[in-house]
Length: 267
Image 1: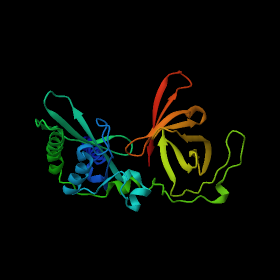
Image 2: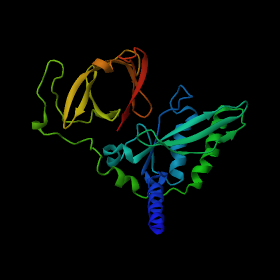
Image 3: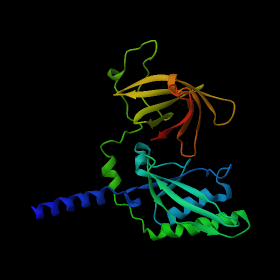
Image 4: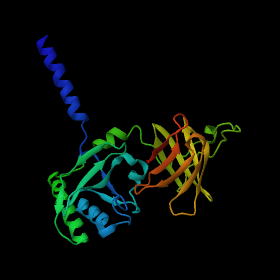
């Protein structure tokens, strides 16, 4: 009996260790166009430097806007999203590197890189290089684990639904073509799948229900850059795209009547 208990404990510990995520499980790193503590894209070339340093230390890194590999286009969970957090400090620039998976779980966080340089460009770049000393110590080497985790659930962007998969129309929810194109973007929110299809006014917001796509409403491009008006029942509100291509939706919760923010996560 005692041996059996030891065996069970060993199996549980082994399973727990296997389930823990590592940067080595992920094939790519995606760097945003800009960081939240700056108004400009690639301020002080910090984003370009982030991409360069990840590649220098063995990662396969891309920046938003780069041409991406086909397998990454087809399965966004093969990547880690890079972000830089700015710490507080008087006369000291402090930066931390964070890597999160496609579900928003932080997989890696570095120690602070610091700089006492007075000139901003030098200070930010020196602090970033300091934080990357931790990344270098990781000795990154892709192990293919994420391929196994996501192979069964990955949905190709260019997958075409059959004509028989279309749903009958109603006044509230009309049928739409389920055939994606290069102007089709896939998202998830609260375990539900959504699609944004490019239109002359902005986008059509569609929800995936089984093998079918149902139109929920329209996303109108406003005159202000990267601002959209969403007319889609409970999802109506205002929105914009962030540096990773996620769609950030601000709306009024119909139950609490309070303003909330939802993130449609890019797949």
